[in-house]
Image (cartoon, rainbow, N blue to C red; front, side, top):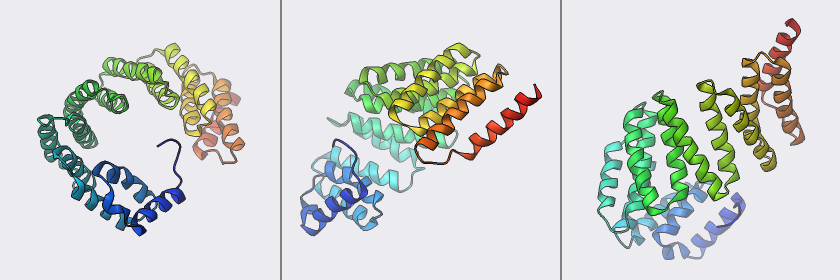
Length: 276
C-alpha cells in the first residue's frame, strides 16, 4: 500500500468491510495486515473480529502460524519458549522461513527487554540467517539493528560497529533515506564510544543533512544533539550551542516548541562559554 493511510481513511475502509459483510471474505494475510489500522483508530472489537477471521481463514500451517504469532505478541509476550517453539515448527514447514524469522525476532526482543543480551544475540543470529535466505531485506534491517543493540549492551563495540556498518550498506542499497539517517546516527554513537571522533562527526553531519531533507525533526534532534556532544568533548562551547540552536530553529520553523532539554542545554553552554 503506497503512501500513508490516515485514521479517517482506515476507519472508512474497516467500516466498509464490517457493514458490507466483507470481513468474512478476508484471507489471513489481509486480516492480519488490517489489525494495526483497527488499533490505530481504537476499535478493539474490530481487532478481535479481524483476529477471529484470520484464524478462521487460515488455509495452511503457515497461515495458522502467523495467527499464533499474533496471539503471542498480544498475549503473554514474555513466553519466549512458546515463540521459540513456534519458530522451530515453522522451520520444518514448507514456506515457513519468514514466519520462523519473525517468531525468533520477537523472542529475541523479549529476551533483550529482560536483559538477557547474550541469549537475545544468539536468537537474532538465527533469525537473521533466515531473513538472508528469504531475501527479506526489510526484516534484515530490523534484525541487524537489534543485533547491534545487543552487542552494544554486551560491550562488544567493534562487533556492533561491524553489524551497524552492514545495516548502513543495506540502507544504501535499498535507497532508504530514513533508515540511512537512523543507521548513521547509531553508527556515529558507536564510533564516538571508542574515541573515533572524526568518523562519528562525519556520520552525524550526514545524518543531520538527511534529516533536514526529510524534514524529520526527531532525526535533526538526535544528530544535532550528538554533534553538540562532540563539540563539548573538544570544549568548543560555541559550536555546541550553534548545533543546538539549529535544532531549535528547525522546531520553530515547523511551528513547534523545541524540547525543553535542548533549551536547558543551550543555557548551560552559554554559562560555560561566558566563564571560559
